[in-house]
Length: 64
Image (cartoon, rainbow, N blue to C red; front, side, top):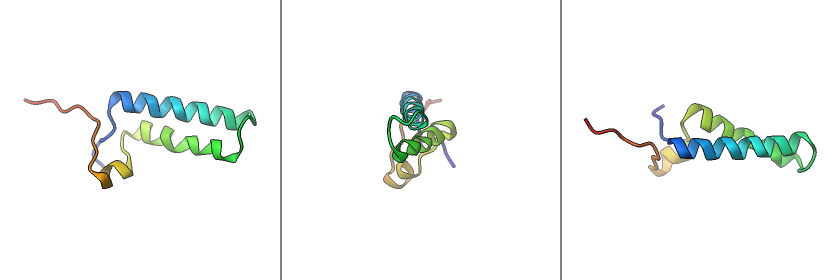
């Protein structure tokens, strides 16, 4: 797995995931709030399967 999720993208994913899981844990939203685990996982791994399929890469590349 090659990293395809960049820094800002990871921060946004982690924030959205934490908010969704927090809302689900407090009962503010329904079961669908637990789907926040998905953006949390992709932020932690730095790899997003749909990005791979679509050829998207938000990581900055360093040129030698």
